[in-house]
Amino acid sequence: MDLLERLQTRQKRDSDLFFHRMFLFDQPVTLTGYTSLVDLPQTLMLLQRQAQNAVAAERPLCALEIGIGEFINHTEEQVVIDAMTEGHVIVLLESSNSCIKVIPVSRTLSRSIEAPTTENVMRGSISSFIEDLDTNIGILKKHVLSDKLRTQSYWFGKDQRRRAILLYMEGKTNTSFLTAMIRRIESNLDKDIPNLLSLSKLFGFPKWTLITRFNTTELPENVASALGVGKVVLFLDRFPFAIVLPTLIMDMFAEESDRNFPLFFVIVIRLLRIVGVLANMLMPGLYVALVSVNPDVLRIELALSIASSRVGVPYPALIETLLLLIILELILEASIRLPKTIGPTITMVGGIILGQAVVQAKLVSNILIIILAATTIASFTVIGFHNAISIRISKYLLLILSAIFGVLGLFVGIVVVCAYLASVSTFGIPYVYQWKARGKTDG
Image (cartoon, rainbow, N blue to C red; front, top):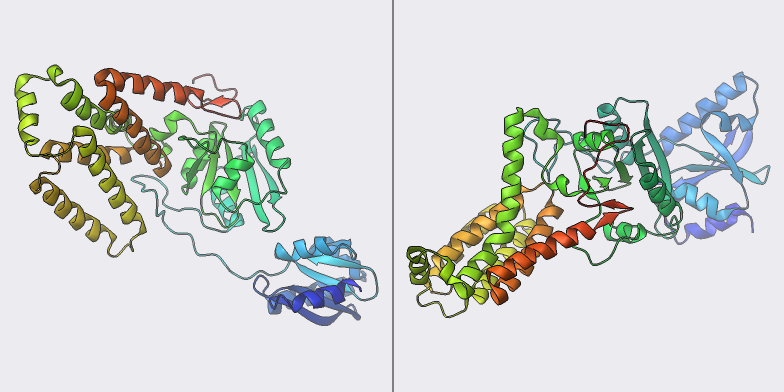
């Protein structure tokens, strides 16, 4: 059974596969590909025009290879299937045992460039990446006007093939880091990467971790800045975000758009983010420690005020705090899942009514409502939603230690968190490392 017959048998199971018989250079050929990926009328016009140009130049059918395609072996069925999956058209030559992989006119399957939806920009470019890989590379090259930008293309997976492009600036990226990353990629090209968890597993990152080893952003300005300091960027097809490696602790406090403000404002904004992280991690644990274990640390007036606010509360401070924290986490998760038209209204009204109700029911104290509301707001002062999640989770460790050992437990928890952060690394680059590009001497 030749290739055409095998493909026709395959069409019975895949109605998206098309066949079109035509003549090129007065020779019968059959075009095959996927209807959903190929604009067939425009592709036919392209091939006829190419054929006419070749006839005028007295060139044979193999001249197609020069302009819009390449020859592949007629017997390698999987190679032909992979080519069609990637969006190519296969020209089957009935007079020989070879075929031509042709770049067709593709269907428009991507949305237009829009403003970012997950990252707000105060001053800076408001164009964001989309699902189309080539469009994303074009957007990025508008921001990085340098001949040192290097790109490498890969195809991952066997069952679900997915294209990826790796970008870096030659001469600025750490050589050992780049080599380790490329070696890891090239040794796992047969792995499927349907999501970022699979990508993390492909890179060999630990499954159970509080710190993501890469950042994701939809802003070309941030990616251009990362490339400029020697970081590596990975784009995945049908994924409207850039994946930036390695991730460092300063990535949650500083971003490129900050530099569009005066220097004094830049320093103040970044200090506020640091204060927000510290407040989110320390305040719940500090409340529990001072209320249940070390009340003697407080001034007598403040201790009496807190005690009066907890009159009638039936639960210990730890249970009281955990109960309200879980409710706040549920509200945050609901605000993400609800439709945008009703999400803010429902969460705002629900939060106000719920907060008022639990206070009147004497389930929690007034001061705890204020503290947890402030810590929840503070957790989102950092850059990147994944960083905010890491901070929200780590505060529970400090809360438990504070409930057991008081202020001493809070300090021990801070040391444990700092030690954990110091142990995290990405291809040999520590998470707490002060990154700078190769050849850069000003830090």
